[in-house]
Length: 485
Ligand code: GLU
Image (cartoon, rainbow, N blue to C red; front, side):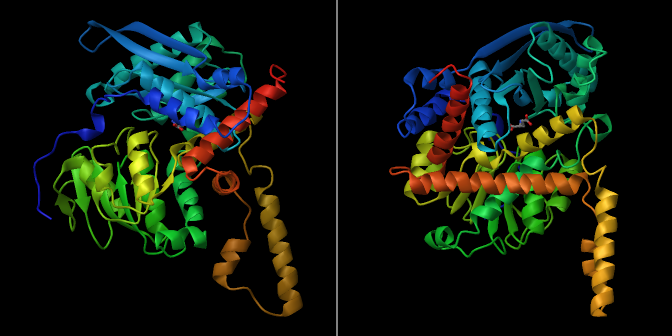
């Protein structure tokens, strides 16, 4: 493949030409035919309950006023609080935020997280903004949410999304707390906070780790792997990833550590390829130093820009950037056997049809990227209980395990080896519990979706099965509220 040194056009930030929310409605309508709920109930679930579009003034670094456009959409109130991230991007628009809010409802239902779906968006480019400007925007946005009752531990709980992270969540929590200084639970008004400010161990890597657990479990079904001509397990599987942001990096790291090979990666500046595998930690370091990935030592730069990594021949393709990346323009060129939607909406419905015809196992976003919100739920629980997971029992368990071990060693007359000792002679800390809770969540949800697909005549793909499963759960929850019979 030819070497290409020039930085290519940025496909990752191209504007959508069609409606993302329209795509979600299409998936909904397709799934609805497999369910038998009251049409009025289905209509209640389908559309967004509350759409808050705001504009507020913020003084920029030069002292001039800029008017910022922002959104918060609450899609479903069948459970409260509602939950979902806040996207910081110059391409934020109402249609996109509505689509993402709806996906959150289905995502939460699939992983049994007791929240309704919501999403926020601020139309700003974080790359082009100073930190102090970002802070002023974030604090003012939070104030606007407080004014209209769109934030609170029992109302609506934002989290990070594309372009935002722990820092923004800390600003939000702090702003919220100034309005409710005596509310003991105020810290639970957002998740994805720094650990020093009420966050939880494992939240940062949660979405990538969830992708890893979900795909690893999907690869454990022999009959499914046989159909794809793949071996069971992850060992040696060739993986291509679009995006080295928080989700892409952590997914790459867990797959690499789990025995798979990351053969291609793309970022805003282009795509790179390395047949014997890219080390994600070295690539991240290189990206931080050079602000891009092109020229990464030992790899070749691919022709075709950021979209090129999507088109390499691989076993597992992981789009981990934005929506609309695999569409009718490039779907015919996709050469993977499994596609895991780590981003929200990376494959359009038209592209999906092409991939399904090719026999690709498509693992949908509303399941595979639900690790983030699952661990957000753990963080929210931690905040409301005001105690770190593992604090009460960690030492007790370690001592118990030590006592059991001593008894076995005495009875058998043999000593346990150093390595096993390290594994047994400990209690679970917060990270251990978060990882284990997330693993259980992803395995359980995948099995529910897969069973739904196997048991329902006419459903042949995981997305349809996931939508049917999620909508059914939301509908049943509404019925339990007593509004629908
Ligand atoms: N923004 C993430 C998502 O799309 C996380 C949401 C959350 O933790 O509430 O799932």
